[in-house]
Length: 200
Image 1 (tube, rainbow, N blue to C red):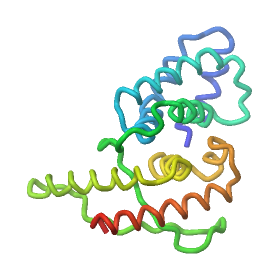
Image 2: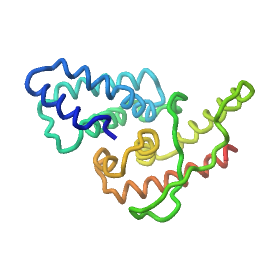
Image 3: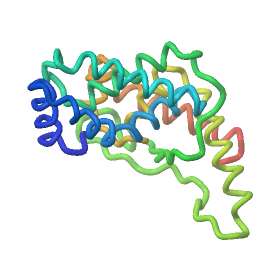
Protein backbone atom coordinates (compact mmCIF):
# COMPACT_ATOMS: atom_id res chain seq x y z
CA UNK A 1 0.00 0.00 0.00
CA UNK A 2 1.09 3.59 -0.51
CA UNK A 3 3.11 4.82 2.45
CA UNK A 4 1.33 8.17 2.61
CA UNK A 5 -1.20 8.77 -0.15
CA UNK A 6 -2.05 12.33 0.88
CA UNK A 7 1.62 13.23 1.15
CA UNK A 8 2.27 11.63 -2.23
CA UNK A 9 -0.44 13.73 -3.87
CA UNK A 10 1.08 16.87 -2.40
CA UNK A 11 4.54 15.96 -3.69
CA UNK A 12 3.17 15.25 -7.17
CA UNK A 13 1.34 18.59 -7.16
CA UNK A 14 4.52 20.43 -6.17
CA UNK A 15 6.48 18.63 -8.87
CA UNK A 16 3.94 19.62 -11.50
CA UNK A 17 4.20 23.21 -10.30
CA UNK A 18 7.92 23.21 -11.05
CA UNK A 19 9.52 22.07 -7.78
CA UNK A 20 11.37 19.06 -9.18
CA UNK A 21 13.46 18.73 -6.01
CA UNK A 22 10.54 16.96 -4.31
CA UNK A 23 11.18 13.98 -6.58
CA UNK A 24 14.02 13.06 -4.23
CA UNK A 25 11.43 12.48 -1.51
CA UNK A 26 9.44 10.14 -3.74
CA UNK A 27 12.62 8.22 -4.49
CA UNK A 28 13.38 7.97 -0.78
CA UNK A 29 9.88 6.69 -0.02
CA UNK A 30 9.72 3.98 -2.65
CA UNK A 31 13.22 2.95 -3.69
CA UNK A 32 13.40 0.04 -1.24
CA UNK A 33 9.96 -1.31 -2.13
CA UNK A 34 10.64 -1.03 -5.86
CA UNK A 35 14.00 -2.72 -5.38
CA UNK A 36 12.31 -5.59 -3.54
CA UNK A 37 9.93 -6.03 -6.45
CA UNK A 38 12.69 -5.90 -9.07
CA UNK A 39 14.96 -8.20 -7.10
CA UNK A 40 12.15 -10.63 -6.48
CA UNK A 41 11.56 -10.91 -10.21
CA UNK A 42 15.17 -10.88 -11.38
CA UNK A 43 17.14 -12.43 -8.50
CA UNK A 44 20.12 -10.26 -9.38
CA UNK A 45 21.28 -7.21 -7.38
CA UNK A 46 22.81 -5.37 -10.30
CA UNK A 47 19.80 -5.91 -12.56
CA UNK A 48 17.38 -4.90 -9.79
CA UNK A 49 19.28 -1.69 -9.09
CA UNK A 50 19.34 -0.88 -12.80
CA UNK A 51 15.59 -1.48 -13.11
CA UNK A 52 14.89 0.82 -10.15
CA UNK A 53 17.11 3.53 -11.62
CA UNK A 54 15.35 3.21 -14.97
CA UNK A 55 11.99 3.32 -13.19
CA UNK A 56 12.82 6.64 -11.57
CA UNK A 57 14.20 8.06 -14.82
CA UNK A 58 10.95 7.21 -16.60
CA UNK A 59 8.89 8.44 -13.68
CA UNK A 60 10.73 11.76 -13.59
CA UNK A 61 10.12 12.24 -17.30
CA UNK A 62 6.47 11.23 -17.11
CA UNK A 63 5.32 12.57 -13.76
CA UNK A 64 3.93 15.82 -15.17
CA UNK A 65 1.56 13.72 -17.28
CA UNK A 66 0.58 11.54 -14.30
CA UNK A 67 -3.21 11.90 -14.04
CA UNK A 68 -3.64 10.36 -10.62
CA UNK A 69 -6.06 7.63 -11.72
CA UNK A 70 -4.13 5.38 -9.34
CA UNK A 71 -1.83 6.22 -6.44
CA UNK A 72 1.82 6.95 -7.12
CA UNK A 73 3.11 3.62 -5.82
CA UNK A 74 0.79 1.68 -8.10
CA UNK A 75 2.16 3.68 -11.03
CA UNK A 76 5.78 3.17 -9.97
CA UNK A 77 5.30 -0.55 -9.34
CA UNK A 78 3.75 -0.97 -12.78
CA UNK A 79 6.77 0.68 -14.40
CA UNK A 80 9.14 -1.48 -12.35
CA UNK A 81 7.38 -4.72 -13.26
CA UNK A 82 7.26 -3.83 -16.95
CA UNK A 83 10.99 -3.05 -16.95
CA UNK A 84 11.82 -6.19 -14.98
CA UNK A 85 9.88 -8.31 -17.48
CA UNK A 86 12.22 -7.04 -20.15
CA UNK A 87 15.36 -7.69 -18.11
CA UNK A 88 16.97 -11.07 -18.77
CA UNK A 89 13.60 -12.74 -18.25
CA UNK A 90 13.93 -14.02 -14.71
CA UNK A 91 17.42 -14.90 -13.59
CA UNK A 92 18.24 -17.57 -11.05
CA UNK A 93 16.87 -17.17 -7.55
CA UNK A 94 15.37 -14.66 -5.10
CA UNK A 95 17.46 -12.63 -2.71
CA UNK A 96 17.79 -13.56 0.95
CA UNK A 97 17.06 -9.99 2.04
CA UNK A 98 13.35 -10.11 1.19
CA UNK A 99 11.08 -11.80 3.70
CA UNK A 100 8.19 -13.60 2.00
CA UNK A 101 5.06 -14.30 4.01
CA UNK A 102 3.55 -17.46 2.55
CA UNK A 103 -0.16 -18.08 2.86
CA UNK A 104 -2.77 -20.57 1.82
CA UNK A 105 -6.36 -19.54 1.11
CA UNK A 106 -8.66 -21.23 3.62
CA UNK A 107 -11.89 -21.03 1.66
CA UNK A 108 -12.69 -20.42 -2.00
CA UNK A 109 -12.03 -17.09 -3.67
CA UNK A 110 -14.74 -14.83 -2.30
CA UNK A 111 -14.15 -11.33 -0.96
CA UNK A 112 -14.48 -12.55 2.59
CA UNK A 113 -11.73 -15.16 2.34
CA UNK A 114 -9.39 -15.60 5.25
CA UNK A 115 -5.75 -16.46 4.72
CA UNK A 116 -3.70 -18.68 7.00
CA UNK A 117 0.05 -19.13 7.04
CA UNK A 118 1.63 -22.15 5.45
CA UNK A 119 3.45 -23.84 8.35
CA UNK A 120 7.10 -23.22 7.56
CA UNK A 121 9.92 -24.30 9.88
CA UNK A 122 10.83 -21.96 12.73
CA UNK A 123 12.88 -19.18 11.15
CA UNK A 124 14.12 -17.61 14.41
CA UNK A 125 17.81 -18.17 14.05
CA UNK A 126 19.83 -18.81 17.17
CA UNK A 127 23.56 -19.43 16.70
CA UNK A 128 22.98 -23.16 16.23
CA UNK A 129 20.31 -22.62 13.57
CA UNK A 130 22.10 -20.15 11.34
CA UNK A 131 23.24 -22.66 8.72
CA UNK A 132 19.94 -24.55 8.76
CA UNK A 133 17.98 -21.30 8.43
CA UNK A 134 20.10 -20.13 5.51
CA UNK A 135 19.52 -23.43 3.73
CA UNK A 136 15.77 -23.14 4.31
CA UNK A 137 15.74 -19.60 2.90
CA UNK A 138 17.68 -20.80 -0.13
CA UNK A 139 15.23 -23.64 -0.76
CA UNK A 140 12.25 -21.27 -0.46
CA UNK A 141 13.89 -18.87 -2.91
CA UNK A 142 14.62 -21.64 -5.39
CA UNK A 143 11.08 -23.00 -5.01
CA UNK A 144 9.63 -19.55 -5.66
CA UNK A 145 11.58 -19.47 -8.91
CA UNK A 146 9.54 -22.41 -10.22
CA UNK A 147 6.34 -20.38 -10.29
CA UNK A 148 5.15 -19.12 -13.69
CA UNK A 149 5.81 -15.43 -14.31
CA UNK A 150 2.25 -14.21 -13.77
CA UNK A 151 1.90 -16.11 -10.49
CA UNK A 152 5.24 -14.95 -9.16
CA UNK A 153 4.45 -11.30 -9.89
CA UNK A 154 1.14 -11.57 -8.08
CA UNK A 155 2.65 -13.39 -5.11
CA UNK A 156 5.37 -10.75 -4.72
CA UNK A 157 2.92 -7.88 -4.69
CA UNK A 158 0.64 -9.64 -2.22
CA UNK A 159 3.08 -11.35 0.13
CA UNK A 160 6.18 -9.16 -0.06
CA UNK A 161 4.39 -5.80 -0.23
CA UNK A 162 1.09 -6.81 1.41
CA UNK A 163 -0.89 -5.00 -1.27
CA UNK A 164 -4.68 -5.29 -1.41
CA UNK A 165 -6.27 -7.09 -4.34
CA UNK A 166 -7.46 -3.81 -5.85
CA UNK A 167 -3.95 -2.38 -6.09
CA UNK A 168 -2.54 -5.58 -7.54
CA UNK A 169 -5.25 -5.66 -10.19
CA UNK A 170 -4.36 -2.10 -11.21
CA UNK A 171 -0.63 -2.81 -11.38
CA UNK A 172 -1.01 -6.03 -13.35
CA UNK A 173 -4.00 -4.75 -15.33
CA UNK A 174 -6.23 -7.71 -14.61
CA UNK A 175 -9.48 -8.36 -12.76
CA UNK A 176 -9.58 -8.85 -9.00
CA UNK A 177 -10.90 -12.35 -9.57
CA UNK A 178 -7.82 -13.09 -11.67
CA UNK A 179 -5.59 -11.84 -8.86
CA UNK A 180 -7.29 -14.15 -6.37
CA UNK A 181 -7.11 -17.07 -8.76
CA UNK A 182 -3.40 -16.51 -9.38
CA UNK A 183 -2.72 -16.29 -5.65
CA UNK A 184 -4.58 -19.52 -4.98
CA UNK A 185 -2.72 -21.31 -7.76
CA UNK A 186 0.59 -19.81 -6.73
CA UNK A 187 0.20 -20.88 -3.11
CA UNK A 188 -0.80 -24.38 -4.09
CA UNK A 189 2.10 -24.75 -6.53
CA UNK A 190 4.54 -23.32 -4.02
CA UNK A 191 3.39 -25.70 -1.31
CA UNK A 192 3.92 -28.69 -3.61
CA UNK A 193 7.41 -27.54 -4.52
CA UNK A 194 8.29 -26.87 -0.86
CA UNK A 195 7.05 -30.33 0.12
CA UNK A 196 9.08 -31.90 -2.65
CA UNK A 197 12.20 -30.07 -1.50
CA UNK A 198 11.61 -31.07 2.13
CA UNK A 199 10.89 -27.57 3.49
CA UNK A 200 7.31 -28.48 4.47
